[in-house]
Image 1: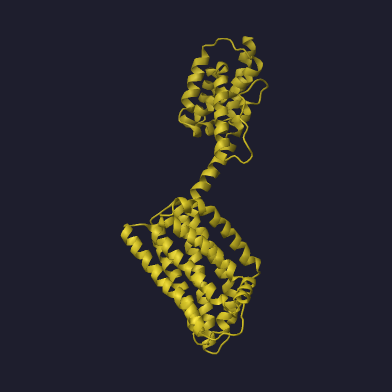
Image 2: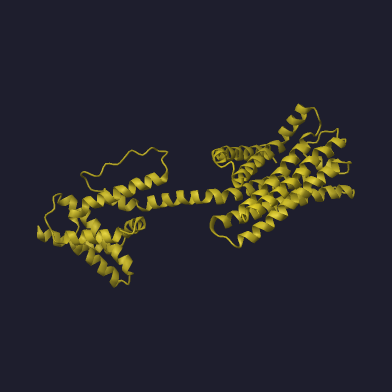
Length: 398
């Protein structure tokens, strides 16, 4: 792996951790919030300290060859523990049971994290190894135990979390299920990383050489697994917000045809507030929706219920649903009213105006979705047909 393959994820996860700090300050007492932040933090520093340049720098700074080895292994074990604790808190249940289970996992991995530097201190590893410490010292007393301890701890976490996620995913839906599926993929990769490393170590014990599994195959698997696991945990938290933003943009764009139709003619229109470029899509959508309602209100003196009725009947005759026919009829009436306002800015009194206004109000009363339907109905052929039929009537009346 290139050095950038370590540092880019480290920076990205570091930014995510900084972004979560306000939530951590507000919800420090919430174990779920603490677990998420700790997991993102450990993932970030794991990538950073596992990069060969950082390994060399740490070794040089401490003056101890291979000091980075137990340091990185401790961080990886902390990440594994964070995954387990987060899953336990995420699933929920009786508070006392959740706390007890979390404390057990924390205690177990605290033993592992304590044992790793102890094994290293008891060993003799004078030659610095930046990329193949596991296999180079696979048969060295105490280094061997250190390597097996961190690999087994890593694989246990991968197996347990995968099992929990698979069981849980069957009972949930939407973003939570998506996040759990992503987590399963990430944990399986973590398991494959541990298996590749352990296979290479066992091959050394047997006098063989499968070092490529540890030095070439395992690192990219670990990098992918760590990133995917972090994304899997963040998806259920950020997914609803992403969906909300996406839905707001889609609705904003779908209201575009109606918005342009209402403001397509010259003359005075409802003034719009200035929206900064960084404004959230919800604000843009609210401004557009409010402007549409204001324009429709100004359009009421030009509404012709006859136009609406013709388009409605044509849609019904073409086997459209009652609701669709109602929306098509109102769309035809709105388009005709826009054109009428352009030709006759000051309308005369007309018995059809109150009926048209009532039909417009009744059609749009359920809310925003009806506005979207009205915007889409502008492209209906029945709208154009009703307008053509209305034109001769207006000409003869004049």
